[in-house]
Image (tube, rainbow, N blue to C red; front, side, top):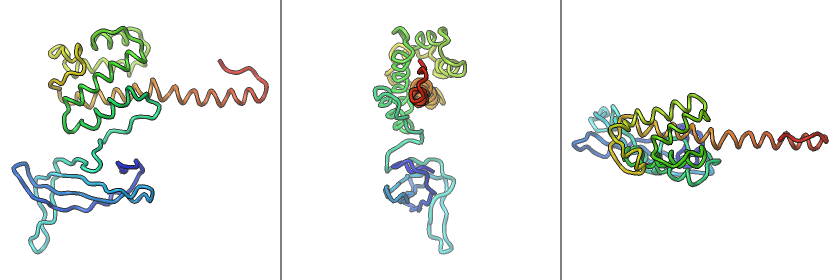
Length: 223
């Protein structure tokens, strides 16, 4: 697993402490200290299960059949961090959409739709309209690889834009979401970030390095 504080790969070593039960089931706190000497921060998860385990003395030792588990410290998401190449105007909405995904898929989707619309306008150069039409513009222009175009097009179908037109006309509006919709939009945003920000940045670094070699050898530079 990756430490949610320092994003360094570490071996999970959680200690479980049972805290009680309610109408929703049985609850435990899972804690561990990040072993990275530059981090050493506490990681705390709250988990709910459908059953409990006991020791030989009959004492409750923890929960079984875990049904839910969320990070309490730090409050974070299981989504990968936004690449550093992504402009902050897009990254901020994406990060917040990831952070609240498990708490409110509706609010997460609203932020993601707004982020998607801003990316299409800022990077794909679509004419301003409603989101559905802007998606169609990108598809018609054939400026994206086919798999990306299909992924963006699927947002309209998964989100059932026909039944919820407000998702297209007021992208930031909080409305009901379909199963898997919030996660899908975030998946699409990740691929768009890679296409519009990460890959161009990688190519620029390679081009600059090659041009330096060409310059040093007195040869014409790449345009």
